[in-house]
Image 1 (cartoon, rainbow, N blue to C red):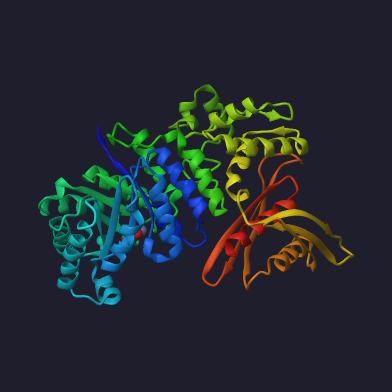
Image 2 (tube, rainbow, N blue to C red; image 1 turned 30 degrees about the horizontal axis):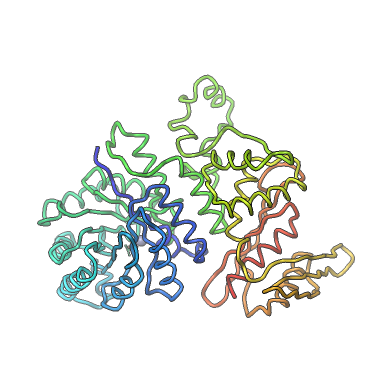
Length: 499
Ligand code: KIV
Ligand code: ZN
């Protein structure tokens, strides 16, 4: 069986999607989780996009040891220099440079002739090659390019030393049959293409991202570019979990393997959704809450008799643990640690100390602690650690005949600050008090939601806020059995990022 390389671009194409931005800590956490999951190449970002992007690419490059770390770069010397500087410390660094090859992009975006595009590809791939041996070249909008011009562009990149050629379906326009034909055509017409990796990068505008990716594999592609949960520009990219599980489940017709540990899919997808402050659509394949749920009587009857009647893959194979274990006030550290291991989390001593303290405090407020509660505590450790502003205490006064008001006290570098504010409801009053304390610059609250983590009146609430300032948005998350507290924590988390 041919092994297909997985190039994960959740941290780059995924993060580029509106509302999906991640801060440095979140990117590092996700990069390590993706490495552990077995991705072969991790695109950590677009280093030249901003100083923050540069920092996150270079920090990811320093910590990831078992995957190649790539930075995206336009086909210019400046972009390539910056990409190189960001990845140069990686155990296995890659520069990923690109230039558009479709008539529309060349004429209206690049304002370049075909010859200028071919010359630039040859020069810039050679320039990148002078810096690193591992260079990927992408023909942006390849699927809307003239086939014979694409052959010339790919030939120029291969001759200049590219070690991976990527064929993006940038606007999610192609169909599986066309994609397979294109891959075969390139393999037949480009000298030396069989000696380098041939990759595809499929967007999902027509919902065909995974299907086009599978068609390309069957036609000869050796690398695929995907994102976890299908994050990415517009309708997103091909979902890694869908492609990987299709290969896993349909080995009979798709005899290809990957290095992905499929049992990491659920834990890491929950990390992704928790970072971006969203939930998987209920019916999202593999990772949605309904993906393994059976409601209709006839289905339940079948599944009880034999799971294979309505399940083509087991929940366990994607890391969904069906063995629910309840912990509580009397559970010791070992029981908590063991349960976390079963759920796929291994924490270091310091993280475990912090988590166990929060577990104990939760068990004082909540009788039973199930897997979702425990997992929420783990995922929220990224938001609760090391933030400059912290919530110390608060009081809110609310009712339908009083002006709602809140008193909030926060700490910053050992000092305490307190403010009182009015608002249109207790949450608004509390947020206004936080704004006063943090001397908030101009910003907008774009979104706010709260949902319960588990069942029961004592359930934990997870609050999410989306704040925007200028053209950037910031997600804040907070967790508590008290919904007002969860909301204030989420708001402070978002404001810490904004500041
Ligand atoms: O969709 C696309 O074309 C891209 C390239 C930059 C690879 O993301
Ligand atoms: Zn893309």
